Amino acid sequence: MRIPVFAANWKMHKTGLEAVAWIREFAVATKNLSAADAEVIIAPPFTAIAAAVEATRGATLAVAGQNLHFERQGAFTGEVSAALLKAAGADLVIIGHSERRRIFGETDESVQRKVTAAHTAGLVPIVCVGETLEERERGETLAVLDRQLKAGLDGCSGDQIAALILAYEPVWAIGTGKNATATEAGEAHTHLRRRLREWFGGTHADRCRILYGGSVKPENIKELIGLEDVDGALVGGASLESSTFAAIVSVSATL
Ligand code: PGA
Image 1 (cartoon, protein in one colour):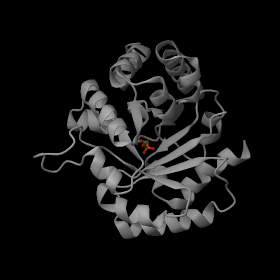
Image 2 (cartoon, rainbow, N blue to C red; image 1 turned 135 degrees about the horizontal axis):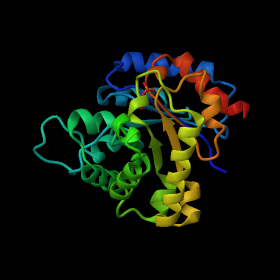
Image 3 (cartoon, rainbow, N blue to C red; image 1 turned 90 degrees about the vertical axis):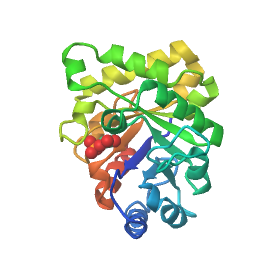
Image 4 (cartoon, helix red, strand yellow; image 1 turned 180 degrees about the vertical axis):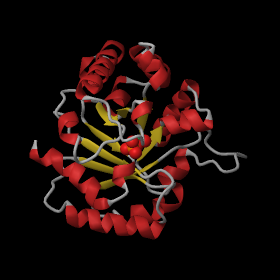
């Protein structure tokens, strides 16, 4: 049994104070939810991580970075290493989000180096994969997922695969209001799990949580989370309001 995971990706939103207010509201809105129903992760901007970690003390919320640099330390102005994130209190880190790939030129190779850096520092990676609209229309979706998965997770052990979180985020569904249908998401998730089984073994692959991301809302989460290989969601826009995100998370308690 995989416990569902819901991760709030705040992107470039929220100060430390706003993060603390969100965390308080969310705790009230989800007070009847137990840790066995769902795991919840918030990914604030770097500048709000310390405040978020402090505010989540004693709560079941975990805090993630949205990115990291793969070097341990050095002259990399503006960058944040895995060790710095860990020291700030983060337990996880998002890697290879499509906005990082598209806007900031990240490659499968840099994703792989970041995954290794996260593991070395004791952070759990949340690795994002997903095809663009053009790739889907050319019928390349599964080939793109294979390439991103194989390159990004190269060198991981079976135990690391079991512990990490994978996020299938079709690029055309992110921030567009247009989510993948259950058929589209189901096909991608089943394919990803099949590949994990082939490459890392069934026991480890069956423990890895695969999240869907891309315009998740309270209205569409039920259908998506009902799919066998969908183990939760990575939520952007609909995570900014604590009540909306709480409504998404609460669905898992009613399954
Ligand atoms: P969205 O973003 O929920 O706003 O589509 C998802 C993501 O980018 O992780």
